[in-house]
Length: 545
Ligand code: NAP
Image (tube, rainbow, N blue to C red; front, side, top):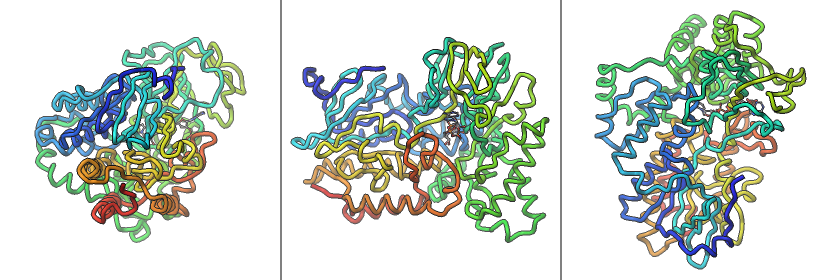
């Protein structure tokens, strides 16, 4: 384990690096926030645990990693020159293309000069005597800043399965969210993949192509749909580029920042033939057309959703030769779309290969990792490589990894032990001048990441400017405003179809995590309107001092 420097240890370290603003994380949000703070003329430092930019697209370099949003809808909107320059190769970009894109942004805007790479913040303490935050990295580097922005991401704290003995395994193992930069060679190897979420369904077909044998361990079947990716030609890009102003305007006004939007028509308003033809057409279309591009009642009407589930199940059956395997991968415990829908390419066909087996953990659980592989209830299985596609401690995990101490010694971890509490998904009462971008209670979890982050980044830039230009230099959420916002987030999910599924949105994937809803269920424009109203009313719900 990495040794963590404590505040008292570091009292002996002379150098404290002082900035107006510290941003934690050089992912897509942190990079953009950096540029906005720079423009304010403030001193700013970004602290990044990885050795490069891109966040999610830096860490998740497993084979098959790619977008579920159309590439052009996911890029930064703020740089017209880059919009004209960047040529997306595929409708849904792969990790290497995205990493190259963020590196191009970093080159163009000289982002790296303001980033400390390979540096992980271990603790931060608010010093009431100076109204500043003291931050310490795991290596003992000390920072002080008046404002701290955590751009730590929703899905950045890898979840390891609660199965003992991984340290005993003598083969090679990798978590998909900590994938090595060097190529992992599966050729002829005996490989296990644990997990069949959005990541699992992407990595499994890729591993199967070269592995000697692949065993997939499934805890829960997911409703995955075909991505239907395709290359983008110069002509495609030229046409897409011509439409950028309208596209970004449309995305800003969309429910979750996606190109697709719910049809106001209900599935029960049309004939069965018309409905089925629509489902067939959606099935053959790219990306989330098959989810949020359909009749709106699929989101809330269990009966309507069930009919669509039956349609999807029939499509899965067409793709898998062995009906018994099809039965295993067709979900029977949740409605479609009650989790973020994984998009796949040849996932279901992978089970037709001779070198692939599927094991249901509910029937044959893994009891422990062993030197040679895993011991299941049925006996030991030997593997050369184990891939953990077991997801994340989402929304709160990354922040809970840091010892964050606010007013009167209160810690964020303790405050959030029964579930996160925030005001606007941005601030927490008792933690002045500390802002969370894309954590719990914001729009990002359900939406297109950059589109949901952009308005918050712009909002934050105004707040930060105000902190440094007004007689008040300290802003903190009012506990009552925080209580109401938190209640609002939780209440919005009550009684919904979403609430019937076990998902990362309720922390169900992490043992012992309280079952509390953590994402903002309203629309993106509504969320932005609420943020702006708060600011325009003199930061209603905040205490300024
Ligand atoms: P995930 O959806 O949480 O899936 C993790 C998988 O590992 C699940 O099948 C889970 O089973 C299983 N698992 C977890 N702990 C386990 C244990 N102890 N033993 C056995 N199995 C275990 O994580 P993810 O697939 O990484 O996706 C997370 C989110 O990342 C997605 O919702 C999506 O927002 C995002 N993502 C997006 C893309 C994209 O297309 N752009 C790709 C990957 C990820 P249970 O279902 O039973 O918990």
